[in-house]
Length: 291
Ligand SMILES: *[C@@H]1O[C@H](CO)[C@@H](O)[C@H](O)[C@H]1NC(C)=O
Ligand SMILES: *[C@@H]1O[C@H](CO)[C@@H](O)[C@H](O)[C@H]1NC(C)=O
Ligand SMILES: *[C@@H]1O[C@H](CO)[C@@H](O)[C@H](O)[C@H]1NC(C)=O
Ligand SMILES: *[C@@H]1O[C@H](CO)[C@@H](O)[C@H](O)[C@H]1NC(C)=O
Ligand SMILES: *[C@@H]1O[C@H](CO)[C@@H](O)[C@H](O)[C@H]1NC(C)=O
Ligand SMILES: *[C@@H]1O[C@H](CO)[C@@H](O)[C@H](O)[C@H]1NC(C)=O
Ligand SMILES: *[C@@H]1O[C@H](CO)[C@@H](O)[C@H](O)[C@H]1NC(C)=O
Ligand SMILES: *[C@@H]1O[C@H](CO)[C@@H](O)[C@H](O)[C@H]1NC(C)=O
Ligand SMILES: *[C@@H]1O[C@H](CO)[C@@H](O)[C@H](O)[C@H]1NC(C)=O
Ligand SMILES: *[C@@H]1O[C@H](CO)[C@@H](O)[C@H](O)[C@H]1NC(C)=O
Image 1 (tube, helix red, strand yellow):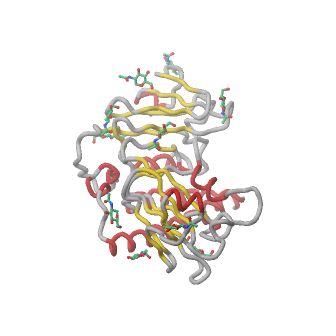
Image 2: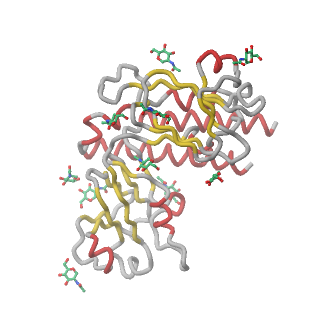
């Protein structure tokens, strides 16, 4: 019973995750995740530093600040103002929740609150924004590289919505000694034979830069892992072609739209939709992981 529920939740979570990525045009990130945008709890922990360190920000991504109207605001400030907590002349202030900022240029972005002592009390966020270019994909998203609870559909649906391009990288995360990553030929992938691998990597994280176009097949050489669905097939396309004919391909990170600031209304509408979906997804994933 419990197992079935878990499997179902895993599938829902994975498909939602893929769906969000497909429609999301940009990466929509809720600052602080569940903490939201607030004065962080007193103590040595710097939750916004930790949050920023655990994400990669690329031009076109959207930061959503989630807070209580009246209790907080969000100010984008200069580096100097950020370091000295001088909020007298911010670059931009938003006082209405949710406030979203589209990161439309590379470099460092600094945020705090203009309200009394909030900056001094640690309500400040610095993010480094990279040019949109090659992407790193964590295989399986939050599940990582495991024997998937839902069978091979889990990695299939993860891969289906993504466009892998030359120069992108796959990152396989697992506990050392519990899995490995084997690149195999198509016929061995289909038959789950791991006695004829192209390459085997056993030390997590395994980072594989996709440097040839066409199909690539991965599994684990551990006994029965392939048969139980720990297998991934991807197609790598050239990174110079800009066409994306398939409706499920999400090549927006490389399209001109991603480099330009989309119209404000469009951005916030899709941003909000995506943000809510991400929240829901996070919830589902949490339920799954807490079992
Ligand atoms: C914002 O925070 C509230 C209260 O914690 C929460 O219910 C809501 O889901 C959050 N919204 C987003 C977009 O994260
Ligand atoms: C804060 O910054 C403003 C201009 O942005 C400047 O005029 C003011 O002197 C600064 N205040 C302090 C205390 O440094
Ligand atoms: C943020 O504030 C600016 C004005 O400072 C406004 O133009 C913009 O619509 C606001 N955006 C959001 C998402 O609140
Ligand atoms: C980023 O967006 C802001 C307003 O949202 C605009 O003033 C600015 O020119 C944009 N920067 C770039 C590099 O497009
Ligand atoms: C991808 O990962 C590599 C190695 O960890 C890192 O140097 C690079 O900045 C990452 N790129 C992106 C877009 O996250
Ligand atoms: C395309 O891939 C090649 C080979 O990995 C790389 O050298 C080049 O920088 C990539 N171009 C873009 C725009 O990502
Ligand atoms: C791998 O194993 C299969 C079945 O056990 C066998 O038919 C095949 O010849 C083996 N291949 C190699 C290269 O050893
Ligand atoms: C796996 O082992 C390698 C080499 O011993 C080590 O560098 C790496 O941190 C380990 N990874 C994990 C996830 O423990
Ligand atoms: C492609 O990547 C593999 C493994 O990462 C490496 O062994 C190989 O030399 C690379 N080939 C080229 C043409 O860069
Ligand atoms: C890769 O693309 C080709 C041609 O579109 C298709 O026949 C094949 O099934 C795809 N393979 C994978 C693993 O998606």
